[in-house]
Length: 212
Image 1 (cartoon, rainbow, N blue to C red):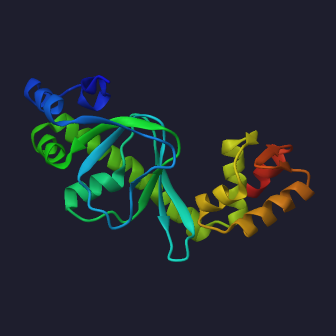
Image 2: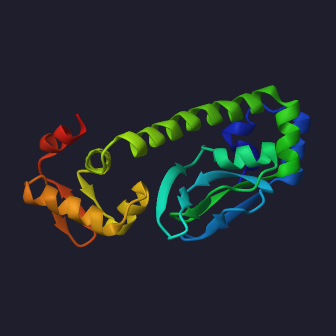
């Protein structure tokens, strides 16, 4: 893997590029690997070049809610926050697929933030974008009914969604039984067709009525 081919490094000075070549390294993990856990210290910035990481929060009872995902050319804002503040991780992450990327040590990340304006600008742009997304998530959790959130999720992921009811519950911080009940209600109304680990949209127009 060519470390410098990563877009975030495109505008670095020659001296900083040399530092990246010397100190950064590549990594590859299989699906299901935990990249960090709640209360872990943050020692590096992972830059994903292939695959997807899911970042989530988990309650004491084991219920999860997905905060966001990190795909190629995206950065993890919790990692950015922890690197800048020195705080420990407040959430966890898992590789949803096989993930490859570049690992930038904390010391190098902080040095680039201080010495490379273009690098720091990209970092803060990512931070701003992700914070907006998280505020939308807070709004949805606090003020929108679960059936509306589920309807929107199905419309965004359709027309055929292949996943378990438990995985959908984890997206919303809910429990499988509630998701299954809502999906059965949608099926009874002719909106979706349910089969093992698969949901097919039959009447997306009717589903949109739940969102509007």
